[in-house]
Length: 331
Image (cartoon, rainbow, N blue to C red; front, side, top):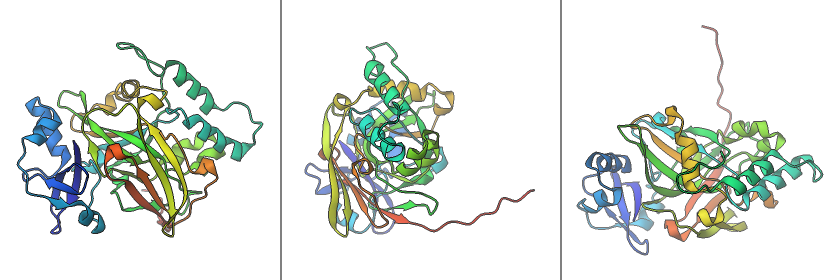
């Protein structure tokens, strides 16, 4: 089951179930958000899929028209955006250390000593998939923002004037709701563009935190249920209507050095991340980066992440935005 959030032509929020083949959506008549559906599922002690299956539906809506008219919403959002935590991890995929090391070489030369990135990647290979009931090695982790930093599929990704670069980070995102008792519930998974400033990050690894404080995009579809062990697709950077680069997207635990369970353990062990009613979008790491393959993006480029297991592609255009002036005043 794949769920899509969108707006009607009159501006009303809708949740639709993607039809097989993806040509249309079946809108639910009583529910306006995945957050609402998930809250009801927890209260009723039922799965999200069971709650959706019990919902009456209102015919069919053209998916193509919703996309063309800019009516898609992120796959998950919160009525109070500042209660939606956006976080992530990296160096979790078999190819991710190569991408990080290439960034390091570009900035510091090929003869630089082994990076901390490579060290933590090797730790993940050795201990990132613990046996059932055990805890593995701790992964890298970063804070990206709150719900206000999430843009809808097909919407523009703003690149701040102070940024040194903007590049796609095509990832799987785990989506979670914290229940009334403080326990996390996984709603499912979606495609995500974690969009970062890899040039700033490559200057010094301690700049990683700065490089991540950018917008991102999630969706367009929420895959309810388990993450496929091996999920594949294509990442593209498109300029003036034509691809200037594309690469193979390989994710799922078969292609990862950490298990999803291990990543979740290290995120939700912190009390602050188990506040009842909060949402979490947790990016699981990028397997491939265009910047590590010689691509320099520019304002107007479109990023496309096309993974058939997740339905329609996630597409966003990067647009440079001017500085927003501010003054810090003593009070």
